[in-house]
Length: 334
Length: 291
Image (tube, rainbow over all chains, first blue to last red; front, side):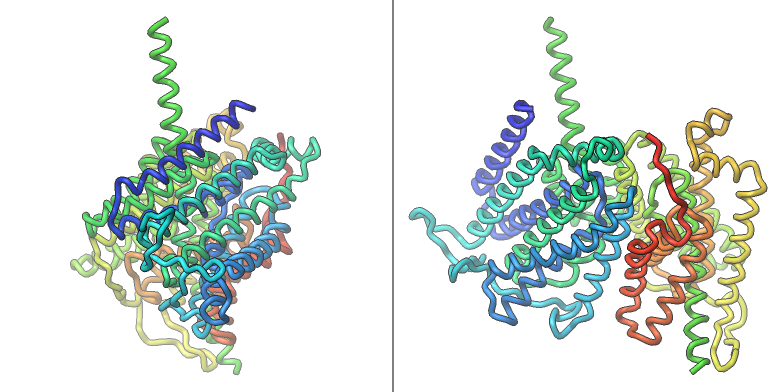
């Protein structure tokens, strides 16, 4: 158990090094923008992984929660003069409540009923965002003010000085998103190592066995569903403020599918793995864009082949391969 | 007033019959393998698009339809053999992602071959609409309903009267036991994907003159089929048919009487209502889990 915690701490440290070393290798605003976007989406994926990897449930509507967080914060800050932080928090509580109302009755059932319910909820949210033009701007989207903390404004277009060093707004946003991601990972790992996490893993292992030994499986499953929805909402709100403009595509079914694919491709249950999944699936379209009309075919093909040959996901497969290699070389020496 | 209602009912039943056929395809594959096949809608797209492009090349309509359906069937087999079978030890979630990859791949190919435009397909018979009590019925609707009814009858016969059909049912109930009595379960899985592809592509062909067709039409039709299957209780054939028809009618009524912007929202709310109050769907069986 101590070894496991040690392993997780190493993962967090490694992630911190990657996050803070990245600015040494990139410098143009486009790359910073992309890295910020990836960090925020990865945060939502870390939350979704709690649900998929540890409670064994699939959400096909997580973009709905992401979009709701983005739109709530956007609407409150631009139309009602709220500050970004309270808007983000109230939005997260609201989204958590929606998840609880939906999840509580459905998670008492065994099987993949949550996937159907979340698919429906995601679609309903996307349809509302598309049609309530007066509030959301409809399919054309709406502008979102910059993120502010107690009057201090974070915008990609400003200049900041940090410990006497002048940094651009792009870099500042990237560092902020990186820290948010690290906190998201740290919180997720703490949850996994807590009694709640142990109960969840027992639910994933065998739900019947867990309920027989007295674990209230429905309660834990809905709790983790609510937490994962809150992750999505918070990241969505930050994403909206960062982009400065949102359209209903942030809540679309396509985006929900992309989020769940990041989890499975990276490696269900591995927090660092799913972040790798997010990085790969966000960068892949950038690479494939050069192939123009072949883009879709290649994307589908790569997705299929990876899942067929690495069904456990990128990181667990690579780790397994590494462990085998090391065992072989150790055996060779002896 | 009544003619208006009748009009919405006709529209609803027509589109509902299509949903029912897609839902049946979902049900078949779900029963045989517990995979929710997100490439189901692509079979519909292949059916419609291949028929349109073959007739444009001068192939007679009937032959074009047969070729399109065969193409979809081959695609269904290929999907099972090349993508699902090699990953047989994978999690169900992983298999679902594979079907999503397959659907993006097929859609990408269709876009390369047929382009991004909408294609119009001629009605099978007369373009003259039929008047019934002041409501207008497109002659193609009768084709959709007729073909749907025939397919359901064939499926019922197949599953209750033929050895192959019973083998599929046995596999869906208990794979290990089925294998013990000599059923080749891999063969059964392949068959389930093929039949499901045939169903989907036929639905795609008959509905194409009404909805038009394009490379990306499979996404939304496939999803509606999934909703219908979920409403009926995933894995139940009768439920799929009733779920499909109910979904079509509710959608048409809410488009007519409430708002066409929110007709899809009403359709998706139906899933929630059913899950809250009839957790196993309209026809889902009570399941006792063995450990």
